[in-house]
Image (cartoon, rainbow, N blue to C red; front, side, top):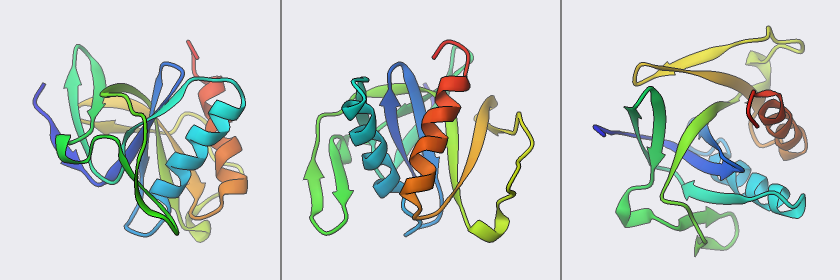
Amino acid sequence: MSATNHHASCLLIGEAGVLITGPSGSGKSLLTLALVDRAAKDGRFAALVADDQVFLGAEGGRLLARAPASIAGLAERWGLGVIKLPHEAAAVIRLVVSLSTEASLTRMPAAGESVVLDGIDVPLLRVPRQKLELSVPLVLGALAGLSGN
């Protein structure tokens, strides 16, 4: 797989990889860890793939994410610094979550928005930055709505 480095975080919930994008300080790490925690509390498998930097590449018609070796299993937890967590080596990305300003969000977004990364079309969900109480259920709901999840 030929991969490019992206400023993003990634986690695995069940068999679905979730890529979280947004500018520095928008809450990528915070949302990633909140989703891992919430999924685990709900009895679902969830694990970190990569925090802050992710290698993405197309393979077999799928978008794969991997952590750079130097940061595998490491994540920034606000107030604690960098911590070591159980992690998965790779994930097939099924959903891209874009952390957006509330002003750029629409109350009733059009269904079916997607983004093309490395030639692969992936569903896109826009959620508000730093609003875990809104974003976590939106992401979990979007995953539930994807076929095969």
